[in-house]
Length: 270
Image (tube, rainbow, N blue to C red):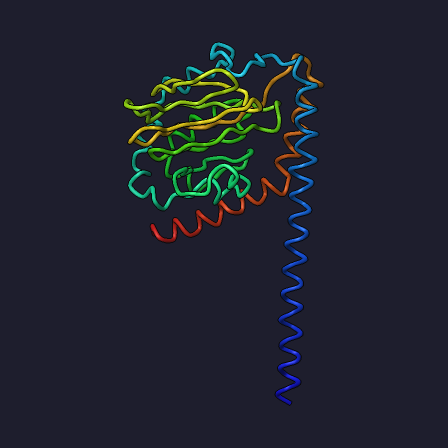
């Protein structure tokens, strides 16, 4: 009898292992198609739409091309005042790869912390309660997709990489910027040195790289918004693609991981 039970247990264990293996294989296939095929398609489509862009397609885009530049620069100290309290428990903040596993290609340590307020249109409600004034400011940005505090520890280097879709413009608002040493970003062949209270717009599909070669932390508010085009039809195509990205496995996984982190973090705070 015991032998039969052991055989059944062994069979169930092996079946469970095989099921996990099949799930892992399925996930790997899904990620392969996402990152090896879909990403190339997105890059190609973005490049095709590029000539019709309303704003510059250069690596670093002039601030004057965005009406909401002043919204951020005039309120940066308000935003900063809500970041500072988060630093008291910065070791508990999630690493970028904890929320977006694909970013493990860029970072595997604990030196790139994040605090998400919005991810591809989905609001992180609990985090927003911690930053109410920042949230009000963000909600005034047309078409806001993603917004999070990007916190780099001293000595952190983010290796060269590229975004996948030119239909999105990335923005950095400098909040805590080291004054000694070298803290900069390279976008294509242009070097960017952040300034506290100043905004930088750039096209992240260009090869870019980040260094914080200082003994201080660097904090920027990272924002993604849709690129706009000269024709409504192209704007609609762009939005259709963004909606597709929003509903992808990659984004849904990131949203779930951020929600899981919030559940743990705020249970400890309660």
